[in-house]
Length: 61
Image (cartoon, rainbow, N blue to C red; front, side, top):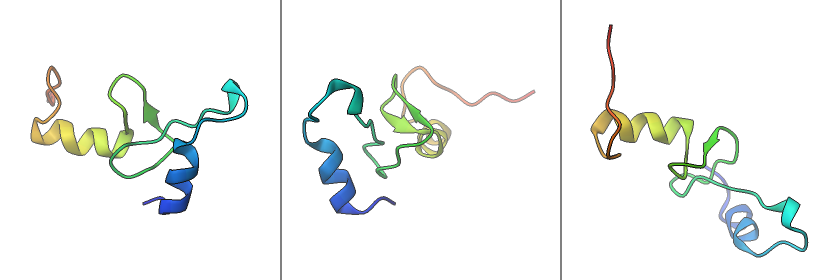
């Protein structure tokens, strides 16, 4: 879980557009972020497993 100050700082508009930091809306993590869903890989796996992301389902072999 990211600190609230770090999350608040990333929400502000940066001076340059290349400095944009995209973070998971659920936990605030910046690494492993999936743009299409707006969450990190860890939260994506949790939400997909519970069936809370439309169009995504867990596969098994």
